[in-house]
Image (cartoon, rainbow, N blue to C red):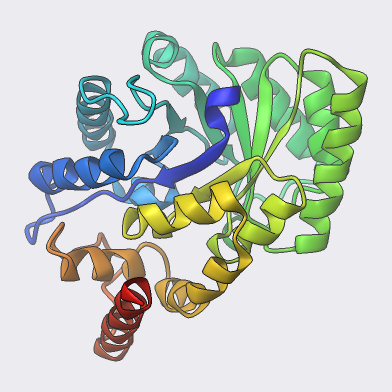
Amino acid sequence: MTNLYGMGTALITPFLSNGNVDFPALERLLIKQITAGVDYFVVLGTTAEAATMTDEEKTSVRDYIVRFVESHPSPTTHQPIPMVLGLGGNCTAQVVRQINFLRDTLTQHFAAILSVCPYYNKPSQEGLFQHFSAIAQASPIPVLLYNIPGRTGINMLPETVMRIYNAHPDKICGIKEASGNVEQIKRLINLSSITHHQSQTTHLLVISGDDGIAAELMQAGAAGLISASANAFPEAFRQIVHTKDASLQAQYAEMVRLLFIEGNPAGVKTILADMGVIGNYLRLPLVPNSPAIQAQLHTETIRLQSCKKD
């Protein structure tokens, strides 16, 4: 899965004040991303507020993005930018049904699916193994695992990740690791490297799911970053990933803190609204940033713009 190296943007979903999807704003966002040369897109993931969208809305957003991306090649590769589809849940049978229902769409348009650890249920490590084994067996395309214990209530251990991978090396292509536990992620990178040395045909991609530690993990051998912040700052986060530039990462440390302080994607939507790309609307139970945080984000954006000029 060499096309999933580098920086992937976890796309937001723009909304109108009446709650409907704002497709003109989505087009502006996609143009911004493609122009910046992002390496791939994650469609209908956490950052997209997919959990608050109806099946009909998700279908219309997915189809719109597919049509636009496939008709607007990357300026660097001159090929359509690869796409990953968020497809997970806490009912294994329902996820398998979704995969089967979307089989043709997946095989025709997507490089992989991104499937989050089951939330709320809090399964054991054995439960995680069986859940993802069922998904791997059902999926017609590669699967990216997604570990984000802050949202799901369960942490998938490196040994479990490798057990899933070793059981399904032809289907499990990698993991978006958003535990925030640097030592755990580095241990997983080491375990995946050992496996890679034993096989000439497969390799587990360990992808950072935390914007604030991307450079450190890239230096440790991570394959890239799936970024929410890149919706607003695609050039900067692509540079961080491709150059492993810790100093540039440090410049964005305060911005990343502010972007997530009141939940994702509230922060990045504040910035994009300031830029005139979207309106600042979220779906309940998420709400826009408080006025105090919006002011801090505005100030920090000005500071970063000043740093770029210097």
